[in-house]
Image (tube, rainbow, N blue to C red; front, side, top):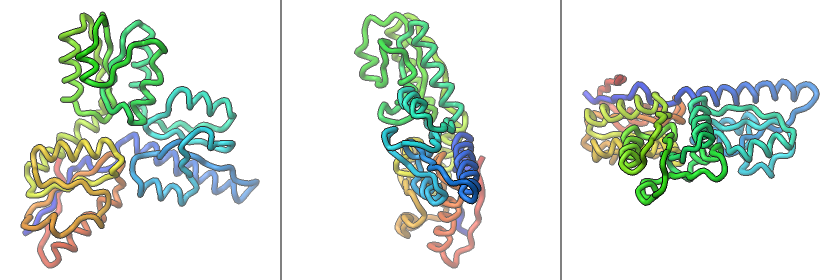
Length: 298
């Protein structure tokens, strides 16, 4: 018998579910308005979440992605789950548009810690991808003139810092954050650490590793532009060399399952349930007449 083991935490996290719910509610109200006095545009400043298929579904409902504040003239703006920079928020407020904030509460907490640390005179170390929109939003809340560090190389080369605070991108691994903490403690007299990694991220990574250990091949499902999905693929690869990161079920080839009797499945925090279901269906198609047992690991 063939087996499919799915990590129970695979798919939407709390922050993404909340953002999608807010977007759907906003689009629904807009549809009602259209039947009445007229409909104002609904924009998302950057993709609401990092999953092209989910964003496409929202586009069909009237939620349009724009890349800059300059593209917005009126209507409603949904702030994505990753948050936006403080300057973009101020620019939107100045335009007088209706701002609907779908920022993940955990991201907001990281923003608040970064701001309070800088106001108390601490240099701020942000653990994460400096080019990721969430990290950019966190950094934007740091007061001007505050030393800000986002890489281990810069941290190791830093000098003259007497006290520093550490926050992390919510989807970082705990191990990566602790590496920054370890280095900081060796060279900076006072270090304050806020663990801003979302608990769901830690749980997802632990479950994914456990499934990867059990499976003959591991499938990580989610957007290629999703940092947490890419991180899942990296972590699973450490424990299962037959790990594949794909965005949709259509990308799963029979070769990926060649000689496999147990397939492991996990998915990033922005991956909708229906995409996971499509992947299970695709595996069933590839395995055709085989008896298949599907179970969830937690």
